[in-house]
Structure formats: C-alpha cells, structure tokens
Image (cartoon, rainbow, N blue to C red; front, side, top):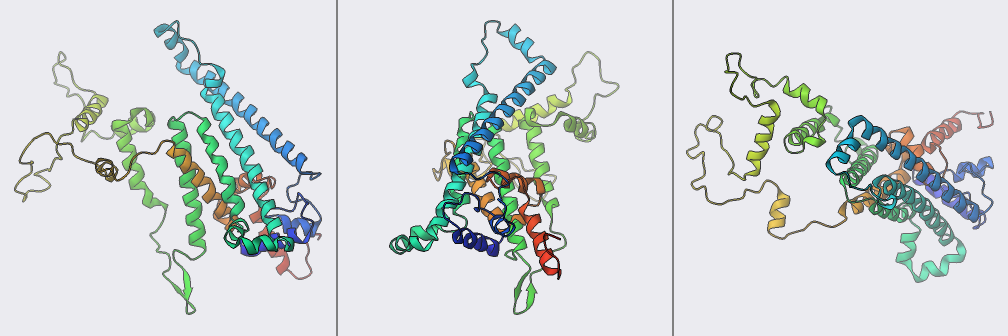
Length: 396
C-alpha cells in the first residue's frame, strides 16, 4: 500500500523463518498479527503453491477457450459468415487447432497469469532472503545489485516480464488493442498516484499548499480527442466505427451531407451518405496539397500552392521521422508496450493501491499476484480506523 506497509511487511517476513511460504505480499503484516495466511490458501510448501498456480492457469485456459469458441460460433451464426465463406470457397479448410486465434489468445493470457504469479513469488522471496543478516556479505560485495533486488518494486517489475507471453497471440488488431488499453490504464493509475501524492499539484511548501488543482481540470478534456478519433475512424476505418453511432451522427448532419432533393430527376443517381464519406477518404489518399480556404483566410494572397508538382504532404511527426530516418517501426512493439504497462501497474499498486480506483481491479491484481481475491486497500483502511478507536480490536 504505502512505504510503511511494505517496510513492515519486509520486517515481518524477515523476523519469521526464511522458508515460510505465506508471509510475502501486502497482507503479511496483518496475517502475522492474526495468525492466518494472507493468501487465504494452504501453505504446505512451495510445490503446493506452484501446483495451485498451474491448476488455476489451466482452468483459466480452459474457461477462456470454451468462452471464445462459443462466441465465435454464436457470432458466425448470427452474421452467417460460415455460409458466405462456404459459398465463396467451398474447398477452404478450417484452421487447425494450434493456429486458432481463440486458442492462442487463451494460451497467451493463461501463460501470462502463470508466469506472473511464479515470477512475482520468486522475486518476493529473493528480496526477503537478501534482506536477512546472513546475506550481508552479498550486499557488501554487490551494492548496486542488492539495492535493485531488495527494492520493494523489484517483484512487480521482475514479474512484468511475463507480459512477453502476449506474443503467443498473432499480431492482429486485438493484440494491439489489448496493449493500448493496458498502457492507458497503467498511465491512469500512475497519474492517480502522482496526483494523490502531491507530485502534480497540492504539495505543501513552507506550511502552505501550492498550486491547487483547477476546478476545470477533469477527464472531460479527453472528449475532443476522442471525438476527433471517432471522426477519423468513420472516414478511414469504417469497420472499427460503431454503426449505431454513425447513423445517429449522419442523420443529424444534413447541413454537411445533403439528402436527395424532392425535385431531383429519378433517373439520375444521388450519392448516399456513405458514398460521400468514402469519397472524402479517397480524396485524402490522393495526396493533394493542403487546402487553404479563402473564406476562412480572406486576406491571404495565395490560397493555393504555386505549383502542383509531385508532392506528398506529411500529416504527422511520425511520418517526418520515418522519412528522415530518425526512427523506424519496431517489430513486436505492442508486446513491449504491454510489458511496460504491466510493470507500471504493479509499481503503482505496490506504492499505493488506492491509486487503482476500481475495487474489482484491486482484487484482480491481488489475485494475479497470488495474494488472494482480497482488497488490501480496504482492509488496511479498516485496520487504521480500528486503531484510532480506543478499546476496539479486530476481535471485537
């Protein structure tokens, strides 16, 4: 949760036997006081823990495989994709089981779960052992390595390597979407932690609070960017745009997309709404020079470029960098972004679990780490509240 909790956890784990398999994690201090296992699981030995992790990963793999297969069958029947594919290519064979996207997605996520839990346990136990007095010679010989491995963020960062298993799934749009979603959620958690810790605004200086958060600051500022992305998608990536939202927009955009006039000859063709949108996309792909409207800029002398030679306008800094060879695309970059997101989420959760606002997310992170389906943030808040009430204990 915070620095005091992690240090107390380490002290509690060090004070007990180094072979104890339970008191590792956020609930070690509370568990030692209550005499229970913080993982809420049997701790007969490391083999039982590993076997339990394997069983849970197998259940996750089987459950996701069945769910995704049912989803594929249901969606195929609803859209009748199977009938269309058979008519277009009757001799086309179905993909083999090892090449099935649903199977590979299930295998990828279950492998991430298993590796993360095992790696997190390994680095957590290694940290506890390196903090023991018997490991002082190693810490003296390797101070930099010792500081790295004994950091309270070492288990979270080390376990994030499990995110490389996302590469088991084919490099498709879903994998990119998973990586982007995980990255932005991690950035959101990091922002919450920085904001709550006074690193953005609201910090104290000479007894006064500096730079209070503005009243207008909020998530609504993302709306212009979100709507801009939606409008870009409806023109260039129609398959990624919600059809219902598109119909809602186009029916209320008669000032820009005119409907067929009543007196228009019936023998002539009038472009439909999507024909106009598709034409806009086609015009953009023709690489015409940028248009400067004389209506918006009436005092500008030249609204057209002096020459219509073969030019290819660059629409983003990324394209400029690619042209000048400042950078290039990285193969498997989405997987590394996912690893970064997992590491950042683990670090933020270790620093302050309250930065993860959703209770279900906190419980999910705790479960993946092997600490049980528990909300340690809520439990520690209750513990602090009970300590502030005189004469009250957990047993009461």
